[in-house]
Image 1 (cartoon, rainbow over the protein chains, first blue to last red):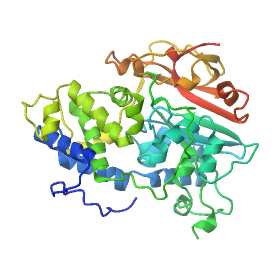
Image 2: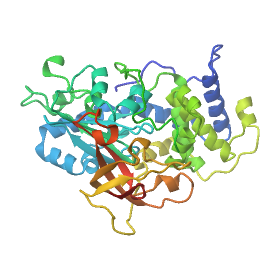
Image 3: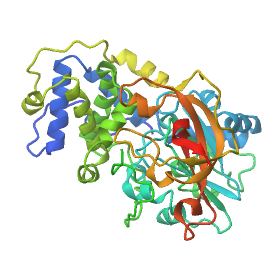
Image 4: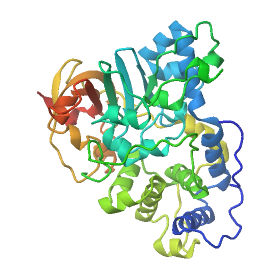
Length: 212
Length: 219
């Protein structure tokens, strides 16, 4: 999540001949709301910039890496994740009440929101399309092993699977298992192993050789 | 309400399709729709439960044919139309045509960081002790309110175990109707996969929901 992308989101005025109905509608609404003084386009730009460049899964990766590196931090994170995560400066909207879920060799955790798209924004950013999609929301609570196969991995038989449906304002962050062969690694290097999907429970962290 | 949004366990043959290196937005209009939605909650004065209901309260065909941010957009339009902040002829014209309805406050660029940092905590002081404790066996009530609720259909009527007591939180079923926060105790309730899905269910699966006290009865 570094830097601006190439999209030209400061120029809404130029003429497009093939705008979809939805594009036209959004443009109409922003125009009306700006004319009425209800929204300030500069504030809108800032909101977008925040979630495109500042708030994303690198935040969560730092939390996980610290938990791997620092047993005291890990204990605080498991006991009460919201203040532990705030120690790293991450807090606020859609992360007001966070619970961390520790994966073990015997237990794999997976997070879903079957009713909408609840997701821990301060640590993971905005949810990906698949997380908000009907197939994920319908299958995760019934056939999570099938979902994991859609992601390309097979959970060993005998590993219990626990699915957390985010039906209230509690947001869940999976603490994946630290990969083998990472003894003595710095937090920054460990963070490079932590994928977004491993913090949702639909993936595993990278192995050391994958980032060598 | 029993709507198409309540998807847990519904048969869906398509696989989940992850997208490598997925960006937060896939089109410029998604960026603007997202930002307008966040910014308008302040002048609009609605709460998150009203927003969720405005998105989900639509015919299944409509809900299922819209993309995620199209649903956000439809919900936002409804909230603004209901409160006479905009009107249909303005949306048609693409410009403001009518006098501005005064609003209490708007989101300034200077206010963005603070608004996001504050968020909207939902825990409230408890007015009475929690009725259930960890380890209690409970049953999710069979309810079908036409209004907003956060008890998914796939757990209704099923028995589970209270795992955690999460504090007293704003009750969406009241808050979405403008009937006040009416805080209620919130619990993580855990169900065996086979309790939910029968003998063909995954024997090593447990599923939990976070359920407010009025959703539960002793089992």
